[in-house]
Length: 243
Image (cartoon, rainbow, N blue to C red):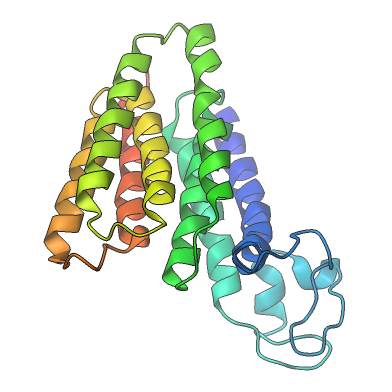
């Protein structure tokens, strides 16, 4: 019962985080404040109320249209909310303990946000890497409290291998390389913290996925593809490491 409640609460929290993530991925690349102005319709610029901002349900209830002017609202908004909700719920279900859940969820959500910005063709804000790194480092005291200090060795190995995999796998050499490496390294650290094989698996996925794309020197593998495999490895690591 407690596990089910944790999953439900995590899923609801993920939906709300996804709603905010929609704002972040739109505004941060444009160097806009994520607080001001408040959420509004991009067509009529009417400020949105709580009725308009209920994750997923508002979009369904309003049939994908603005309640004020009738302008179409992209289906991407509820999809992002649903994705973060499902991933947070999946993390809660996969983990055997609630202590690492916030850190794991934040790392996963940052990977989703960065992937969306990258898919849009924008520059991924380094803030995603910073927040992800802080969440990953927060696992350090949790490991000490839970007596899992041996996992830190595998987490560190995951960072090393994941960073090397991202560095050599990403042959584009553009200004976004280090942001991508930091994000993928955080995912490798998290997977390695959960399961000894998790970090190396993330590194292997990065190398194999980039090689499979057959990209030239001036191109790179989509971050969404790399992050998807790494997130899957994190969730699988959580399942494997359950007591």
